Image 1 (cartoon, rainbow over the protein chains, first blue to last red):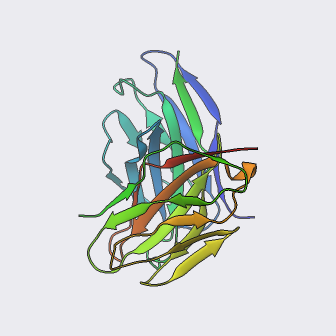
Image 2 (image 1 turned 180 degrees about the vertical axis):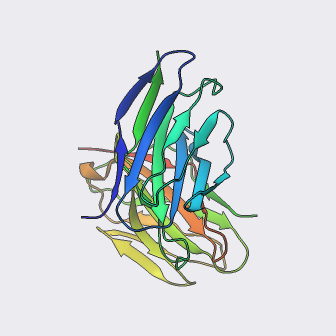
Image 3 (image 1 turned 45 degrees about the vertical axis):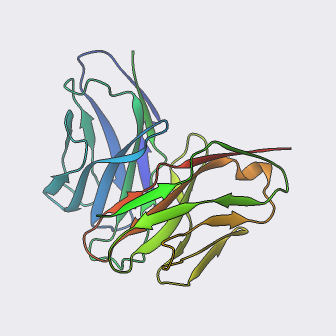
Length: 115
Length: 112
């Protein structure tokens, strides 16, 4: 079955470390997204990519970086510059030239905790 | 601009009670509207959608009607179950650009 795989499910980061969250999809979707979820704040867009080798900042990109070298993969790096990285991170995908009636497909998330 | 406003939670209901979660939106033109559900520790799953005015989306006993005159897309279920306990997100999508606009989510707990 097609879907989005995020790994790991739980991740612990020490102060000053960079960590990378994996997101892989086999839906042949062009566009991919990273969201951050904090309690009571809903979803906030970090980065998105509409095609390979191109990506755009979302609303809260500071302290994060991404790459899009392959259509299937959109890893997110949480750098040491991100001062409050503890959160639940969600990856999503959609067709680029999509029918606006399409929804997003989401992964099951990665919970990052600073220790 | 585009935005979605949901009722504040948390919502606690007894099993078999009637559920309404309010959602209103601000948008130009004719967006598509969605409800997503998030079970504990999981990602978001599409629950239902409606793509034009007066459309009704339905799934698993949940319903929502796209009301352009009141810019609303309220989620309803006639008889909730303990397994419906989750966080529910209302969202909209415009026909240009490639972003969704999410509400802040409403947490629902159903007690036996």
